[in-house]
Image (cartoon, rainbow, N blue to C red; front, side, top):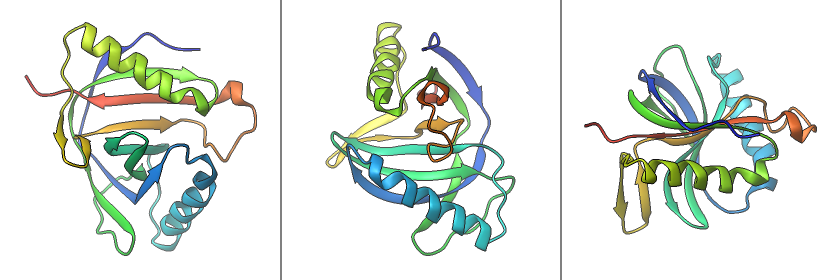
Length: 164
């Protein structure tokens, strides 16, 4: 099931994430990535204040530079293979999907097509290694490792819009 696309306002949010380059499909890597993220949070006593998100920093299909992370209550300094920062405040184009993660390519395409059709412009720029986004992510409201019922996986795809 797919919601209608919409525009929402988000405040700046601190986060911590595991940064990684992946190539689609990377489904087999997700359990290990989420286990490493969970272990890092536990080791550093960092409680997540929201669901896991998959942040697309640079997209050059099928290759992606991503951050697999969670929102935090306060900013932190990350170490090792982890990074931290602030998810930017601003207006975002969003769409919500309930169903299999395999369909998220199409869900992203629907959101991007709607935004272009309505004249919205993403906060992104072309770089030699692909398209860079200020913030583009898939927010996993039900952990991909936490359910086998694909009909109950709920994901929000969100892309920051350029400031007017």
